[in-house]
Image 1 (tube, one colour):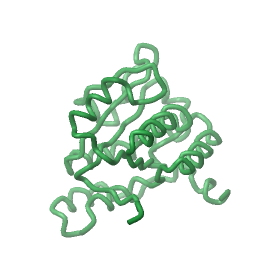
Image 2 (image 1 turned 30 degrees about the vertical axis):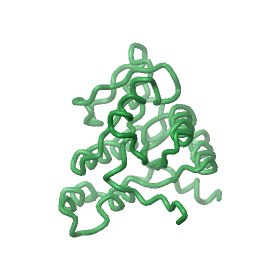
Image 3 (image 1 turned 45 degrees about the vertical axis):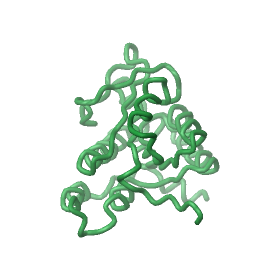
Image 4 (image 1 turned 30 degrees about the horizontal axis):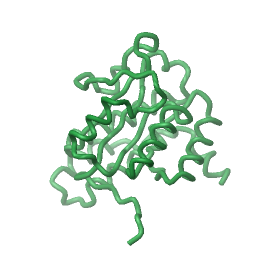
Amino acid sequence: MANIGRLSTKDAVVFLCDMQEKFRPNIFQFTNIVSNAARLLQASRVLGIPPILTEQYPKGLGPTVPELGAGDLTAHAKTSFTMMTEDVVKELEALGNPKQAILCGIEAHACIACTTYDLLERGMEVHIVADAVSSRSQTDRLFALSRLKQSGAYLTTTEAVLLQLVQDAKHPNFKEIQKLLTHPSPDTGLLAFFSAL
C-alpha cells in the first residue's frame, strides 16, 4: 500500500528546533510559531510522544524561549544546521528509532530543511508543521516549504496533527487535546503560499 502519511502516537517523535531568544525580533510570526509549537509539545506530553529539543549556538543565540514550555527538557546544543547531531541520533536509537518525525521550529530554509533531508535519508516520514515553522524572510519560508514537499516531506498544520493523533472523539485523551483546540491557530501568513500554487 502507498505511504499516505497517517500519523500514529506509537511511532512518532516531536522535534523542536531552535526557538531561542535572539531569534525573537527577527523571525516572521515568531510569537504565533512558538505558540503553535507549544501546543504540539503539550499534546505530545498528553499522548506520550517523546520530544527532542535543540538550540543553535546557545552561547550566542540565547536559551529556548520560556513560552514554549520546554523548561524540563534537555536541549541539545549544536552548531550544525541539522538537528541530527550525534546526541540526537543516540536519543532516537534509545527510543527504538521512531518512524515518524513531527517537525517544528526555525528556520525553515536552514535547520528545518537540513533536518528534514537527514530524517528522510534515514527512512523516516517527516511531517512539517507549516504553521509552527518560519524564517526571517517569508520568501525563504515559503520556498523552503515548497522545496521540502518536493523532497517527500508532508506539510501539515498544528490542528491537523492534533486531530490525526487522536483519530476519534472516543480516544481516552480526546478531551485534553480538545482543550488545545479551543482557539483556532492564528494566521501565520501561509495563505499566500497556496495562492501561488
